[in-house]
Length: 365
Image (cartoon, rainbow, N blue to C red; front, side):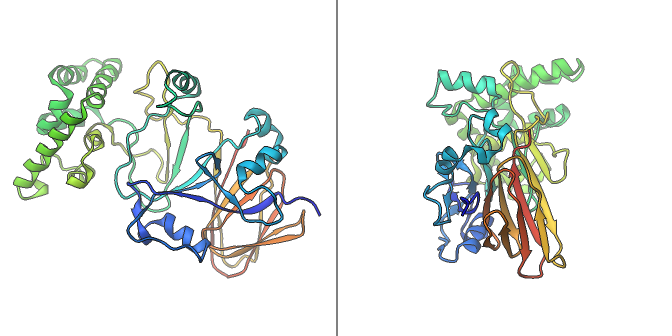
């Protein structure tokens, strides 16, 4: 019998503090649905489901015919399963990490350098930049979700600086004056002024940031009505509780604009020359995420054959995955994760006549 190149995975959950807690988390629900033996702790956060071969979250293989225990180990010995182009381009490694996030509070501020800058930073300070790879990201909303994408219009930022003294204190008088002046000087001047404002905020000492945020919360609380805040922006007001004390609360006064797409956004990669203003310039990604919807009236669905390894997540529905190359069958329910080697054919037979919702990550070069 041929060695299996399609098999189910048991994936790693990251319990970061910002994740939703217990069964309120979609990550926890997907985990529990795929494995009935899973016990969800209702007092712990379930932030991210990692589907891939990352060293800090290498998925386990759920197939006793395979000697390797994890996906990373298996790929190391079966590099052709990546597809020829992927194998050659990425030195025999799976080039993406597929995730589900379940977010309760604001995530930490992150900078995603491009490949050139990532390699340089990794060499200079590996303790702070442990990965030499760039990290272009695409986020797809499974439920209604708000994200920060780019800077607000300068007029809005100036309004915040006028009406929120704690914010203005961290930006500083000189940077504030420069931003106001730039409104009449064109895009280049505004870009420079925005960069200066953002630098002042992000380089503020943590102690000073906490002091100003505490003053802001106290001032709003004394007004006895959150609607009395000078700003009428719901996303900023939502952050003004002690639970969310962090510089990211004030970043919302700089950095919140809706994504140009209704259901997805790209995290910008930052260039070495201008790391502040790569606002919304989706890179040509090394990966693709396909959304597959199949009506329950369909009895069988053929998964597109690709010259790339891929990982499939079943979000809704119940199927049997039929693998013609090894005459095998794999049952999958909600939360089930399937690794599919390059050029493999997979048929999904609906075992319950309900609509399917599937997401599939791969690398198309």
